[in-house]
Length: 381
Image (cartoon, rainbow, N blue to C red):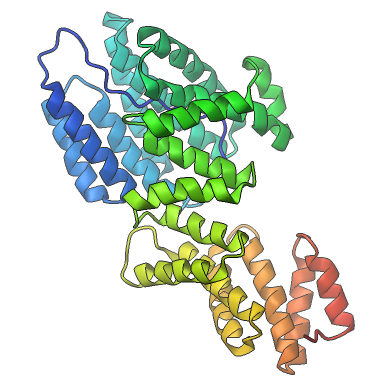
């Protein structure tokens, strides 16, 4: 999955003095709705946050968390841009509402918190879509709001989520993605270790942001730190609470595979296929493509050629449907491995076609080297 930058999320429910709200009810609704979002129970979450809007019409929380429902619709299929415009519109409504509140009371804590959160999520998606300048501008404004939010309520642990995200990514992202470096002149320096400490504090002690902190830590350890054990640590926490979240489950299967815990990984991916068959939200063609690939790869490692072929061919078929812009790594590897399997089965013409197709794709790892080798000499186990 593509990584993010300038992600300045603040989730807070600090009370606004002078309003006759039932804050206990507010708190219980937010907790329930947040759990429903991460549990991919979007219809339930819509109803919960509609009630928040009804009960607290002058508070930005209802609008903000309805936008978060849309965010998770995007997150489970990140390359699907059909929800983007609606998401941006929802966030703009949150920002406008917060601005109206702040015009009358610049120190309104909730308006600062939720405007910062809206800017953070907008910057998050803009970065994923590689709109770096706009993402940087949202990040710059959002960082100022995080600082202000902390000044208004230094005891709010959730505010540290924004600090942790900023400190980590501002240090790491420019090193991994040089295209971002010119924009960093707008920002103070990052600090990777400080960012991790702040995120870990929120993951343990946060009230509304603990799941998001765990999610960020999981992706950080998976994608940037290459620490499988810590990735699993946070995935265990997330899946214990949200076992049907497809993003968490897919990461879990992939991380287990990277750890070479193949039997357990295959069990996870078979569960993914089972849920896809039952129509669970987010257990879509991308999830199925991935599951077929890893199960097929496990059969290949066991020299169960016929079974490997069945699953690889299913993965290949889905990749040809999904890969609209360019061939994915899944497709390239699958075509290469199918070529090797066809060679083992004495189907040389099909094998040659596979190797030539691999050479038509951009090089990844040793894919071209192996394709050329097996074009010259048929693959043999």
